[in-house]
Every structure is written in structure tokens, then in C-alpha cells.
Length: 223
Image (cartoon, rainbow, N blue to C red):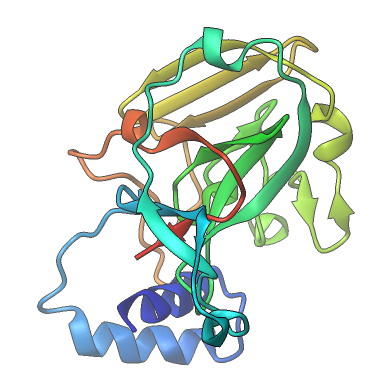
């Protein structure tokens, strides 16, 4: 239930659901006094063990179909990523059964390179332009790579290979062999959350090094 509430709030912050303003007003009145900062990074993740299917009663529905095991991220190096062209992108990885977390992923062969940051596409820039930015027009920002009119990012990145990896606790820079760059840098001017005008930032103790990993499939559970 908590994850479902968080998903609704995240989408309301971005103005993506009806009555976003009212939902945010209710939430503000309910929790402002007692609010504690929470991280947008997701550290406790699980993936399915395809050798251990659950019973037939789990064959339908929103939950996992196999037993889940903990995903233990291995520190990423260029040696691990090199020589693997990008075959697919996704801005909707990560699930808790009732909705998605909006992790960003690049499929490299059989594996997915994942950034386990909730709503990651609104934090990431490709060649200096945000991947997603639903309110760019009202703020005079450049048109994002992905919006209601389509996906302009895939043609720029599919087939490219990662040739540079730089990760710090609050920043990420990936360089590709076509001279493009995917980056996340919280020292740069990131859009505020439209509903509350709260700044988009990581907690001081957050560390991107622990939320970047290769996953064997796009099915990643946040529980």
C-alpha cells in the first residue's frame, strides 16, 4: 500500500493524473508537519528466479509469477559494459505490483543496464536535454527527447556502445561511441516537482553507485 501511495504521489507531482493539485493539497495537509525526507533511489530490489515458478494461482494478476530473489548489484566498470550495443531503452522499469517506479534502462544484449531512480527520465539528460520533461513549454526549456509526440531518443542511441563510465554518489556520466552523453548531475538545474515546487534532489547519504546495475531481465521488483 505504501508503494502504491508513493506511485500516486510521484505521478501527481509530475501532474500526470487527474486532480493532481487536490491530491497534493490533501497529502500536504496530512503529512507536512511530520514529513521526513525520503530517497528517490531504490536500494532493496528483487528479480524472479525463473527456475522456481509459483503455483497456478499466481499465473494471473499483477504480482510476480516466480519466487523472488535479492538482486545484489555488482559495481559497474567499463569492462563489463564495453562492446555491448544498446538494443532497447525503457523509462518504465521497476514494479511493486500496483504500478511502476519509472527506472531508466538500456538493454545491452540479454542484460538491462538499470538506473534504479524513481522517475529517472525526468532527472537524466541526453546531450544536455532532459529525457522527459512534461512542463518544458511553460518554463522555456528545450523539448525533451520523449514526450506525448513520440520517442526521439531511441534513434539517437540504439546501436551505440558505452565507451566511458563515470559515477559519483550524486552524478552519472555515460559516454557513447557516437559522441553522445547520458548524464545525471544534481549540481545542475533540475526541474522542480510541478505540484509542490519542491526541489528535485538526492539525499546527502544517497549513492548512485549502489543503484546502477545489470539485471538479467526487465522484471525488477521493489518490495
